[in-house]
Image 1 (cartoon, rainbow, N blue to C red):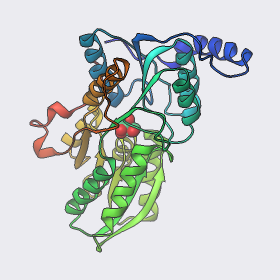
Image 2: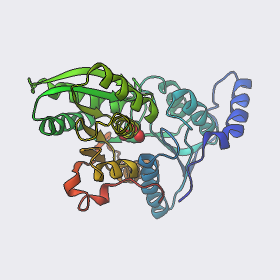
Image 3: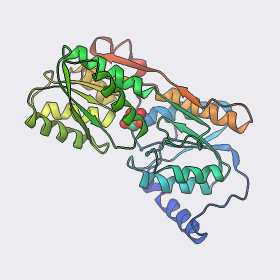
Length: 324
Ligand code: T6T
């Protein structure tokens, strides 16, 4: 596998590209054709098992189809860090970019710039609100995933008690939809109440402190829905620190090695695993179809499964990778 390049490594290149662009009045030239054999994957953040698994799938598929895939990721899940990476990539004119936009509106302008440069745009996992820029979007059904999380948590807490949602960053399409699905489903569980949604800025340490503070104010907290990897890993740490393991139930999205360890240890009671490898494969397939004039599919939904401690062995194929 080609390793995910950290923004720090590509920083010099990006800065150079940015200053060239600044000299051209900040716009990217639309002249010159794209290199149709080159694909670039821009994940939401570097060195994170969800995106590593996505990259593994995309890399294998690109090689199989005779394409070159390069991956460049920001060091943090942040549009201000992802934008210069995208801008630098546009200057190199790949045939297609597979991107997980880190914000549903803030990434629209640079993605439109890529489209204007003749690059085929494919969304993997997250998506923009503006559906006119990408040709195809591949993701889990995140609203259904949030509903499934609420149903799972309801069973774990006996359909009663207060619940907290730990979300990542407002404006992240996927996790916002998961929180929405969770809230919608909670309305069908009158015995359960909501303590609202708190944001961890995609930082596990912040999620842990949210749990500590919430337990201090609400010692009867029954359950937590953690909308992604960082929020679930941090929620588990928060409960460990408060000696509340098992008393407060956690349902978390994703299945990183740490989350699986927490599930096996009984710190987390259920995980909703996605299929990032297939998102990567489908992303490459859609890019290649677009580049070769074949029809593309505007929306593709990939699988999601709920995993509990009892079925960790049979579900191991859904666990995310730390390397290909
Ligand atoms: O949950 C995934 C991804 O689906 C989401 O859009 C952002 O967070 C993750 O990458 C996990 O950290």
